Length: 454
Image 1 (tube, rainbow, N blue to C red):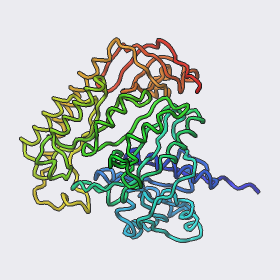
Image 2 (cartoon, rainbow, N blue to C red):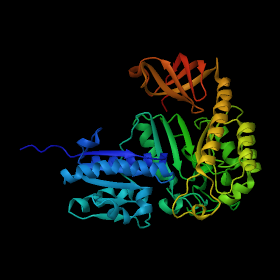
Image 3 (cartoon, rainbow, N blue to C red):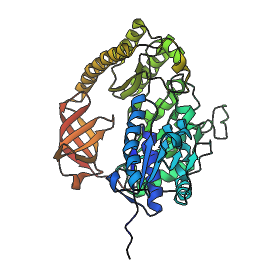
Image 4 (cartoon, one colour):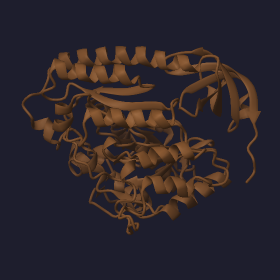
């Protein structure tokens, strides 16, 4: 008698860290003999990897979960797992709220999925949200791309921004060793991956928790040292890193990025507000003047560098004049892209309890005004690409036009051009830019750069 294969489906909400966690958990499930199912309704194990940074992300999770909980009433052998930040924040309360749930697990437990799921399959309902030391992961992730890959370098965050729930849900900073990171990158290079993004919630904090200091008295392991250490991994043509914190962003790091040919000229450095009083209330630990100096220094070393960031409007107590300081910063710097959000009170954070909350109307109005300016500035920044030849790493077919392929420039600008994906996937291609839009480009192929074997 043949048994039908056990199938799993993962839906991921939120940040790049969550996407990387999902890839690792998918790898664990495949090691256990599960097969990926595109359709959640065909899966025996459904995992939601959740995000709690915005209120609407949480609502989305509950609506997905509600549909599958209903299905479980008719198919009791269905296993429902809630992982990630909502799971960490709500813990055991989730089992009461959604009795159909089998496993609730925080982000620090991603590598333990096999053990936890085995307990569930033996009939237990499991909550895993206690703080743990994250074990070095030996599972091969099931990566979504065959060209670009995430590599975690540091988990957790020790910052205490007054609006942010991340330290509560992702735990304290835990850096991986440089040797483990390089070994993972070397394996990716052997498998044909061309680009790696080094990931951390606060990546500039990398190495602070690892032992050792230099004769000059600084930490022996920093993000800068790591970039030098992994910059010559064979097969890897491009290296990116995210997300940075202005408090720890150094000129030494900028200099390394300018010197190392594989490190892309793209910096994602959230500023959150352009007003010093708001930054102080947020607990960010820097001023808008310091932020501007960082950007000036990057542009001194790499005039063409692409700068992206995150910003929050409508923080408790933000006045119109303070919001205008954010607009001024955005107008002066000219970001290539800006992720914007209206402030959303998160449970367990200091700012959620403050009485000087702004009205939803005011927050929405400010968000629209900021987004309007972001679009104008991004369109201006895009003009520099027109008629230029850019190196593009081809990642996939354009989903909206199968005759085109798409990839990214070193500055992380999405670029489309006509070609055959079967021939060019994973290739570095010289593309002449013929059309510019605020957040993407189109062009014509000039030549393919065949990688030099090391």
